[in-house]
Amino acid sequence: MTIDLTGAQWFKSSLSSGQEACVEVAWLEVGQVGVRDSKNPTGPALVFTPGEWDAFTAGVQDGEFNRPGA
Image 1 (spheres, one colour):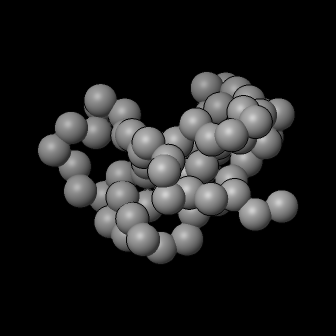
Image 2 (cartoon, rainbow, N blue to C red):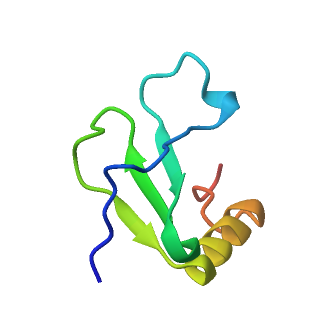
Protein backbone atom coordinates (compact mmCIF):
# COMPACT_ATOMS: atom_id res chain seq x y z
CA MET A 1 0.00 0.00 0.00
CA THR A 2 1.39 3.39 -0.98
CA ILE A 3 0.70 6.38 1.27
CA ASP A 4 0.65 9.86 -0.26
CA LEU A 5 2.60 12.12 2.11
CA THR A 6 2.31 15.34 0.09
CA GLY A 7 -0.52 16.74 2.23
CA ALA A 8 0.79 15.46 5.56
CA GLN A 9 1.01 17.97 8.40
CA TRP A 10 4.43 17.33 9.96
CA PHE A 11 5.30 18.44 13.48
CA LYS A 12 8.08 17.99 16.00
CA SER A 13 8.13 18.05 19.77
CA SER A 14 7.90 21.43 21.44
CA LEU A 15 10.97 20.29 23.42
CA SER A 16 13.00 20.47 20.20
CA SER A 17 12.46 24.21 19.80
CA GLY A 18 15.42 25.75 18.01
CA GLN A 19 16.94 22.37 17.15
CA GLU A 20 17.74 21.62 13.54
CA ALA A 21 18.31 17.87 13.78
CA CYS A 22 14.92 16.53 14.85
CA VAL A 23 12.45 13.82 14.07
CA GLU A 24 9.11 14.96 12.66
CA VAL A 25 5.85 13.05 12.94
CA ALA A 26 2.61 13.21 10.94
CA TRP A 27 -0.74 11.58 11.67
CA LEU A 28 -1.73 9.89 8.42
CA GLU A 29 -4.77 8.20 6.93
CA VAL A 30 -6.28 5.16 8.68
CA GLY A 31 -4.41 6.02 11.88
CA GLN A 32 -0.96 5.44 10.43
CA VAL A 33 1.99 7.53 11.60
CA GLY A 34 4.73 9.00 9.43
CA VAL A 35 8.22 9.74 10.75
CA ARG A 36 10.96 11.66 8.95
CA ASP A 37 14.21 13.55 9.49
CA SER A 38 13.56 17.30 9.76
CA LYS A 39 16.88 18.02 8.00
CA ASN A 40 15.67 16.17 4.92
CA PRO A 41 11.93 16.87 4.52
CA THR A 42 11.86 15.65 0.91
CA GLY A 43 13.73 12.45 1.79
CA PRO A 44 12.29 9.11 2.81
CA ALA A 45 9.80 8.68 5.63
CA LEU A 46 8.90 5.67 7.70
CA VAL A 47 5.22 4.75 8.06
CA PHE A 48 3.97 2.82 11.09
CA THR A 49 0.64 1.17 11.80
CA PRO A 50 -1.16 2.33 14.96
CA GLY A 51 -0.04 -0.84 16.80
CA GLU A 52 3.58 -0.41 15.76
CA TRP A 53 3.57 3.24 16.83
CA ASP A 54 1.99 2.40 20.19
CA ALA A 55 4.59 -0.34 20.81
CA PHE A 56 7.43 2.02 19.87
CA THR A 57 6.27 4.89 22.08
CA ALA A 58 5.65 2.49 24.99
CA GLY A 59 9.20 1.18 24.56
CA VAL A 60 10.60 4.71 24.60
CA GLN A 61 8.67 5.54 27.78
CA ASP A 62 9.86 2.30 29.42
CA GLY A 63 13.51 3.03 28.59
CA GLU A 64 13.77 0.08 26.20
CA PHE A 65 15.92 2.09 23.77
CA ASN A 66 18.26 3.74 26.27
CA ARG A 67 21.95 3.37 25.51
CA PRO A 68 23.68 0.77 27.68
CA GLY A 69 25.34 2.44 30.62
CA ALA A 70 23.54 5.73 30.06
